[in-house]
Image (cartoon, rainbow, N blue to C red; front, side):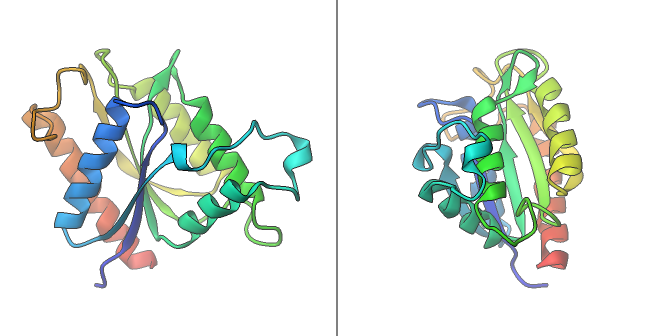
Length: 189
């Protein structure tokens, strides 16, 4: 099995984001497991709100994000939860990436293996938002979602000084999700 290329990012670009911490930890663990990892920040892809005028006129950051997605067999997305849904900035970025390459598969995520995680100070750890994001990625974007999702509840206290998740059970969920992401991304690469 060759080392799969996996793109990792957070749906939040806020400084100090708990989901950016989760994405960084996932990138570290994926690298240690032998994957070729690219960790990006959506802050590096500033995009206006997508609307019908964007079709055929995607800004350069949309093309750059689409190129990142196209270059990887798998993705790990750490998504925050806003009012029981996933981050609007994440949806906007994915929508722009979907229209940035005319003539290609509409989404760029079609056939990509995706693992989801979310971190929140609340008890559910962004789980409600993750279930919605999962549906959109599968039905709207054609991605192949792995069954495991990582919901880090109480995330404001869940990370140790070393960046690791201190709860063994939650850490195990992350390890299992990343293991399956590597395995399936290797098969589709």
